[in-house]
Length: 315
Ligand code: TXA
Ligand code: MG
Figure 1 (spheres, rainbow, N blue to C red):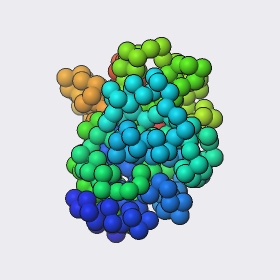
Figure 2: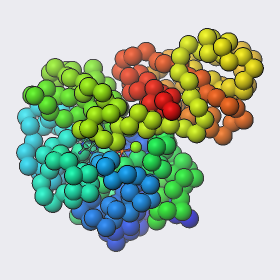
Figure 3: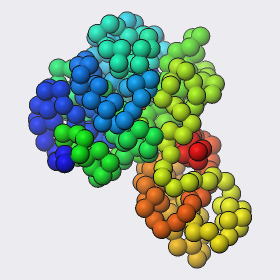
């Protein structure tokens, strides 16, 4: 079983030896390895049981490090890097040869992000290489937002879990790249589209969930174990009267329902984002047959939360 701790030097040493370490980020926990060491990266795919057609995000200590990995940085993306890094924003650039094809699943672009969590920032500064890190969950399951989530699911497959406390944002980074001179969103995430729109016209990649540009965005990507139905909660509970169900609501409390989680009593989307994956995990272990969830306002972080709920509900 991997030990959990706050020992950044130990994490750095293990990663230097090509081993796997779970790292805290402000979005979700990542499962990290030396991005330039193909054998180490292969270990990530094995531990997660992740298909090799699903490319990994490379995490860097600072914007300057991106130059080592990519051929060029488009002006618009550079501006976003300066303003929004470190933070929940991943950018796609044409990769240099130094980035193993295994990391990008053979695609010509590499996904890069500079995380904001202080522990992982310090770790990256101590390393002489960037870190490839997908979310630290078995493939297809919801992302971990706490060290205990990682331990429960991957503890026996990795070498160390660097504990940075509960994730600040709670959903994965927004993924963007340039397409036909437009900022194009490939995954909704911790950086709201409204924020990106301050930098110019933004296009949303068609079929976000099955886009060959982003092969990992399979529809059922966030599926929890229990069936999840998304819709109007009054209607769902009435239609499935007699079933053992759990409810995930945005801010409303339901009288007389045994298993329910309210994401944010005061209706704050950032609080809801912090709680959503934990809520899905919790419902998974409750004595219920099905989970009902309602969609949130389609704005700000609500878009990313709704995206995860919709994907989780497809089976
Ligand atoms: O917040 C996050 O982004 C977290 C933390 C750990 O940084 N990471 C994360 O990684 O969510 P992962 O692997 O669970 O999701 C990354 C997604 C994948 O589904 C993949 O399809 C897409 O990013 N991706 C990675 N590299 C890509 C590339 N070169 N082109 C298109 N999509 C890419
Ligand atoms: Mg993931």
